[in-house]
Length: 187
Image 1 (cartoon, rainbow, N blue to C red):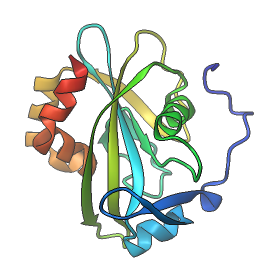
Image 2 (cartoon, rainbow, N blue to C red):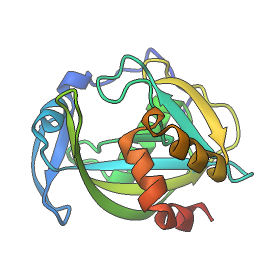
Image 3 (cartoon, one colour):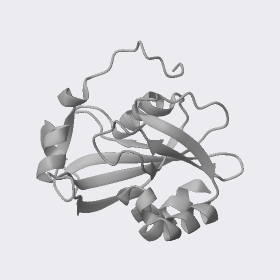
Image 4 (spheres, one colour):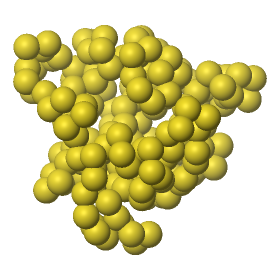
């Protein structure tokens, strides 16, 4: 895939569908993405954590225009597979759409979390976590990502401890409660 290209066609966010699942991640239907986040419908998702050769993690600050958790630091990318789309293919697609590069991804685990936010949105996701490695440019899409940073894990842990509200809920959860799963894939 080539780097981010603003002329590439995309499905409008309002038309995106998510895969509704049961607690065992078995599909039970579909719903519009925003409706799933408004009604706390359990759905399938993925998160990608990319590291570099020095072991630093690639973080993104979500663009201020995002409807969900704008302006917060998060993992490299996250999203939802489309109906009929393989999880790994969806993770690779979003990595390219948001950050403008591709890399091999390894599936390291699955978890479920649910949380309600003060803005009327919620998360109720069965998330598959992927890790990858990248060296080089990050020609991110400014509609998706405000900025990126390479951060060593101890510095990330300190940042989350000192300023938890600067990070997305799910990323804090990965670092504080699912660190062993992340480490298993980061090598």
